[in-house]
Length: 80
View (cartoon, one colour):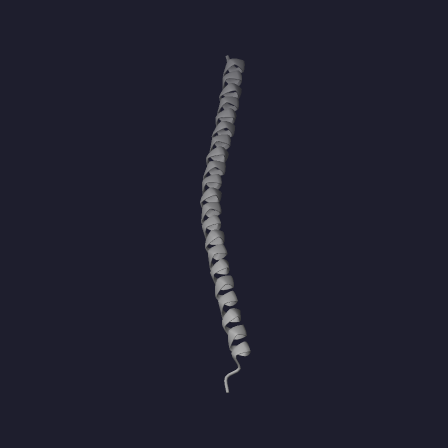
C-alpha cells in the first residue's frame, strides 16, 4: 500500500530543491556577469596604468635629454 503522506512529503521536498536549484543558477549567472564586468574594468585600468607609465617614462627621458643638452651647451660655452 502507498503511504500518501510520505509521497506528498517527497513531492514537496522535490519542489523545494527545484526552487533552490533555480535560485542558485540565477545567482550563479549574476556572479558570472559581475565577473565579466570586473575583468573588463581591470583590463581598462591596466591599459590606463600602462599609458600613464609610458607618459612618465617619456617625461623622464625628455627631462634627461634636456639635462644632457644643457650640459653639452655649458661644456661648449666653457670651451669657447
